[in-house]
Length: 171
Image 1 (cartoon, rainbow, N blue to C red):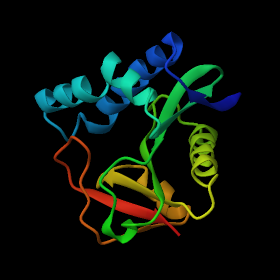
Image 2: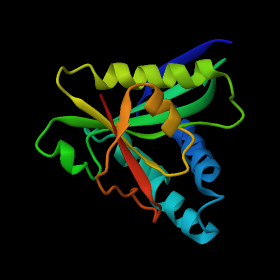
Image 3: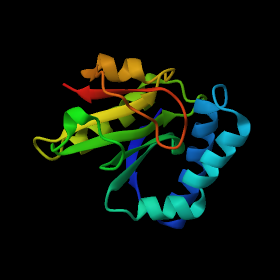
């Protein structure tokens, strides 16, 4: 299987790819723990065509899509936005946000390719702290912890969903 990770920009193809990925991944991540009306509103507010174009054009974000045999399999967003943990106040930092791989793509190479690209992009500037914010039941917490991220005791909240979350910072 050929696995590649690419930056995505606000072209018709880039937007369409993200429209499918963002919506499907939100459903896969949250449908078992968030009521349907709330999840529908979250998707409409955050992953509409207009919202995605605005976010793709923001200088605060870089979007990565991982492909398996040229099929979009997952995405992540590297961003300077979000409610930064107090521990990082005043420090340059970036957040790996919305990390996810569609459930039908189970090969570890896909997950690893996206994760490694996220780290490479985030570490491109020396001295930058990398952090993530995941809901407590996220299957990705183990991936981050096994790759040098440490849970912090800071109060964290997810963007747009009333779920308990955990913040992790790269060591």
